[in-house]
Image (cartoon, rainbow, N blue to C red; front, side, top):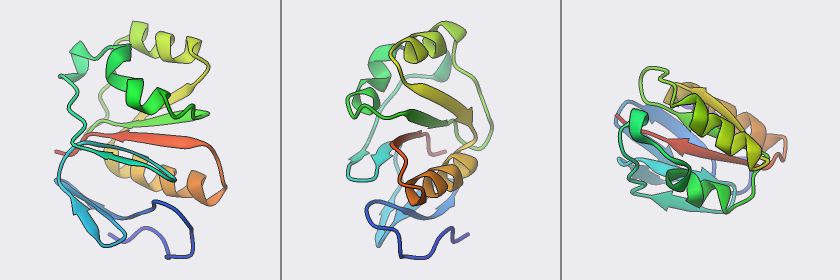
Length: 122
């Protein structure tokens, strides 16, 4: 499913299907972290129940207002202690399935918001 027109500058997600994300003309088949000006492919976090603040360091280093955490085909929440740590760092976090995170990311980028998406591809 195609998400947006190509009029937005920077990194936009052109489409998502389980197992891959298309960015401009690149197809990525691994977990990734993406912001308007940076793509970190091959993000390799542990299972959701074992995530820590260190796993989100590449996203937090970009100092976004919000992190969109796409958890794959199904919404799956990490521990409340991790969510609390991220919030205490001054960054909001939203947890949703990856397709919704991709769509929301594009909307926020289109509004010139400071957003990073940490996406699990399954």
